[in-house]
Figure 1 (cartoon, one colour):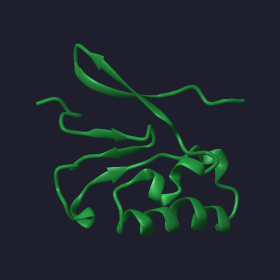
Figure 2: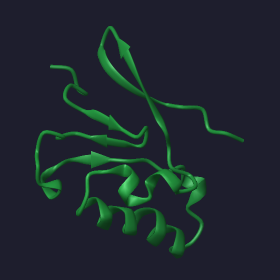
Figure 3: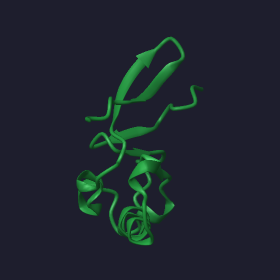
Amino acid sequence: MAANEGVVLQDQVLLNRAPEVEKTTDQGWTYSLYLTSLNSLDDIKQKIVAPVQQLLNTSSAAGTGLLDIEGVVRYQQVESGEGLLFMPTPQAC
């Protein structure tokens, strides 16, 4: 079984490791931020704490505001000989 088998990329920012599970608190999800976008405690609250709280209530990246967060990493799905890979898209300057 490939490491990323069953993982679903949602809205280019949220990797859902158990999308078949109905209860969002039982799903395993990941999103990434560029460290350079975290400069204060407010950044941590707005870019980590608040979205995670929202993810506990919804499995939609759009519903959490992740799509609008400055510094969130966007991914593209790539098929390879090793299975499914998720590669960061180049960051706009």
